[in-house]
Image 1 (cartoon, rainbow, N blue to C red):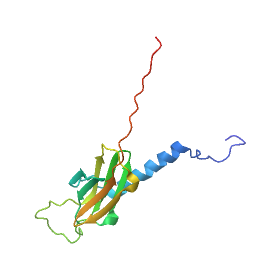
Image 2: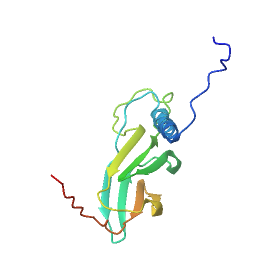
Image 3: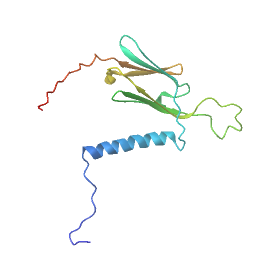
Image 4: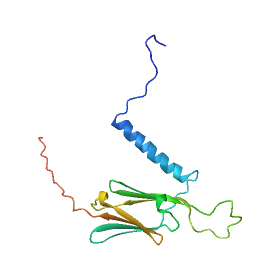
Length: 149
């Protein structure tokens, strides 16, 4: 050790490190929701438009609203959560098992401009409805570049 050496210091948190830490925390949360099972299921989902909104209708009966998360990143909307099954200690034998339990996740790409800040959701009769206001069409700019050859 050199005479003037001090304790090892962590790198300062610049924007890149903060973003990397955010991603690490987000994906760690997803992994913890999944538990040790890697069995992710996708609930049946409809996506349609009304006059004002893009509507996502997802069939998730038996899921409590506080067990669902909705995230928007660019044009991708991710809905994830957990549906708990019966207490494993109470089940002696399954005779038929068709209802998926555990972690679910569904990613929906929306190919239309929308305003995610005005999104609203409701849970009714086993269906999650997410209403996202449509935004005006994007203005596309045409750029012409002349090459000096």
